[in-house]
Image 1 (spheres, rainbow, N blue to C red):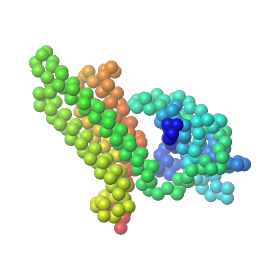
Image 2 (image 1 turned 180 degrees about the horizontal axis):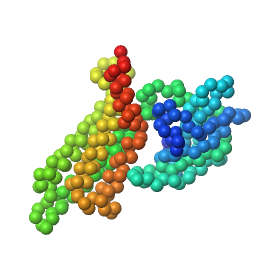
Image 3 (image 1 turned 135 degrees about the horizontal axis):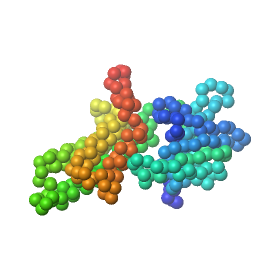
Image 4 (image 1 turned 90 degrees about the vertical axis):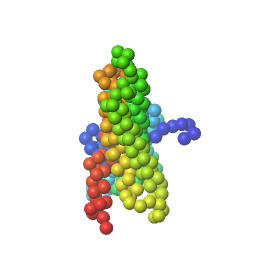
Length: 278
């Protein structure tokens, strides 16, 4: 932290699907004298060019037989055999630098084993704050689109006939945008407060903290996508121009759909709490 070094997880792989769904990575960690040997390739490693610490999800075969385990290891930037393959060429969030991480015979000491995924409980802290962070980032993108559309509506005066901000349809869309964004902020703030107070039985009622997080992430993403769509309609055809930032917001706001918890998994979590619990 004192050196300002960054850390991120490297879990995703081309053929893995969602690790949260129990998928096992092809990246393999093999025990060797004094530690481990890692080989594999990871995708969507956000900020890969700037990271110093990589939390790498790998498959470990139990020595006594049985099903393989998913295990997190700590890999450092200067570990021999680690390299970043700059493959990131995405529709949105192009600035995130989510390149591939390649591991070729990376030797790690024994104490670099961080955790076994099977020991994680549902709604673990890392997943909670990741989900809320994705939601907050997406709200930021949608808010930027909103501000651009509002400024455009105030200034745009076709033929000098007055600003389009006076047009009922424009006003209705801007009002809807603000409603969606305010709802999203409230959901994320409520989920964060509930998670922080989860040990206090009297601190909240109704939906469980982990379920509030899932609900906030899914609904905020849907709200923000709708908000940016509406902002594009306010701005009109020129919103498609590459030189205008709203074109980028339109692309970027969709990226969080593919971050956990995915919508289907979040909805199943909510359904299970309602239908399968005590």
